[in-house]
Length: 206
Image (cartoon, rainbow, N blue to C red; front, side, top):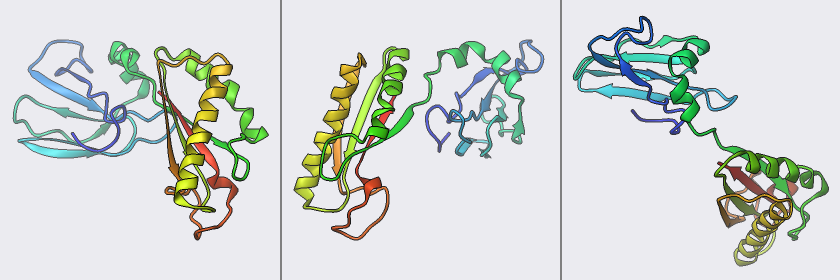
């Protein structure tokens, strides 16, 4: 299989043929189900073996793959509730999808804007609910200033977010802070252009 993220990938839900529909044993095969990524539509997955390939590109689409060398069947939709009933234990053991947040900063500063500060308790709550949680904070800048200055500023912004979350009691199992400086603008601008939406930190909780 290829394409999509590990979770979208499918939960490569493998079982005995017929288990989904009849609950009884049958020749060995697999059922692959493409799950949504949280509330977002799924990406795309190609299911292939020596017998051929099929593409899954819609949430809750499935394909049945017969025994070794058998050609994958035609994609077919499944009802979400049927998938949850058939694969409850597998779904329960699957990590929750990552959550992403954007925080914005004052010009040439590591001070978080008041509206973004209001998101910090929510991020801390999410971290507390995921055990063990992994926190990633990437600092970004607009295009004003030198590459070196903005790289350092991005690091300061990432560190400021991590410190504020720690002050709120967030204790993730791991914390990664990094900087992209002005290398990855959210809003494309010419160099030396102030743009508030580029002065940000991207926070990911896994």
